[in-house]
Length: 344
Image (cartoon, rainbow, N blue to C red; front, side, top):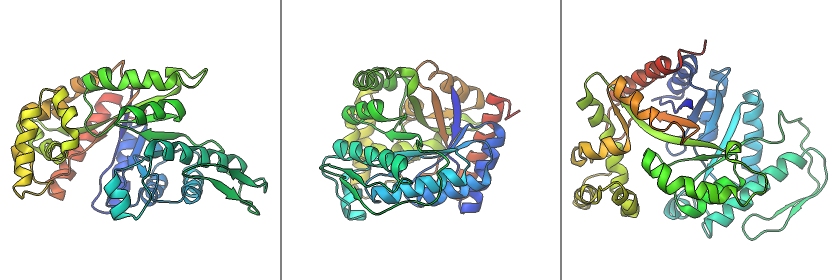
């Protein structure tokens, strides 16, 4: 099982330095998110800071850029990294797309399917000068009179799809090179809710096997010699997601419906979503994150063996100062070195 990492930085320089440290510790992939920074610009910074680890977006928003811009940025990032780039895409939610980006939402599963088709067709044919024409409901392609004059490092860049719901999870297995989980994804949820949908999606592509798909579990991680401190650092992330009622089924699956309701009531009372950690129970943190001492966290990571192919560790940030996140990040990088023995 691969150990990968999502580095944090108060500046791009700090994020890049953290990626380099994680690579040296043995992380096989370094991932960048998209919200407070551009995923593709952050990926460019990490590509130049690292030499061996793959660099991935986890995730870039699929509908807020044109497919052609996404395709070109991916080709540039693959060149910049020397063929180490992984394009992780996700749909995001309706409000984010329509209200924040003025982007079309429509039918996200069909839209993402056509986006992936567009990208792969563009990468394969953009250097030939031939017309690139595809019919489609969401992302038709009509590119005539265009030829990219620069040779690509690869014409097939890996595409990983982020998915939570069953339909999108099946799509990731059917057409993706990898699947990326939600930030909260317990081994039990992975085994009982996700893997059956993965198998159903794989069955739609003749000849595609489970080994052809990289399952990446995103794991909020907090390590400290004081397990109480480790749990409190991770609680803010749990509170952030628990404030969203659409995750009710997820929390109920873990027998945490009442715990979530307490968070929702506090949020409705006017508390900001980033500052709900004190309402989150240790039961929630233990069920949904990798928090505790170094030995405890290693045990929690090991629980994904045989279920996931990769674990993406990320430091806690919600409701924490930069200094607290920085300390948490350093502890995780040390843990990665312990697990992997370092790159050597």
